Image (tube, rainbow, N blue to C red; front, side, top):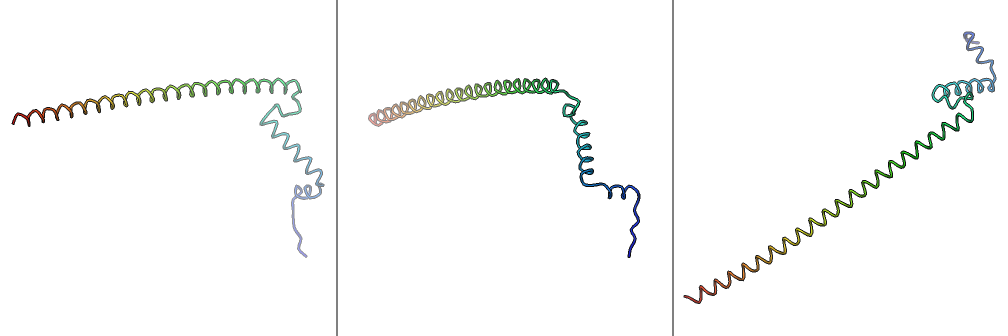
Length: 121
């Protein structure tokens, strides 16, 4: 038979029931929650929590309004950029059409001059 030596703390933990251990764990959890978020403590009243919640909701509404405003501005900017691109494309097409027309006129003049020169010979 082997005898296991242990200290007093280990013996005390071994004697505690599961319910006692659970209660200690809940108390420690509550203590940690209070340290992280004081509004989660039992000391905060319902009115305090209500005010805090209302403030958070108000801040959220303001943030949503700001995001909606940014989104609208971005959408407007994209529309303006698209319009500018369309204008540039139309101008490019007009310029191309004009250059092609000039090219045809020059070709016609060249053919006419070529015919005139051929007729003189």
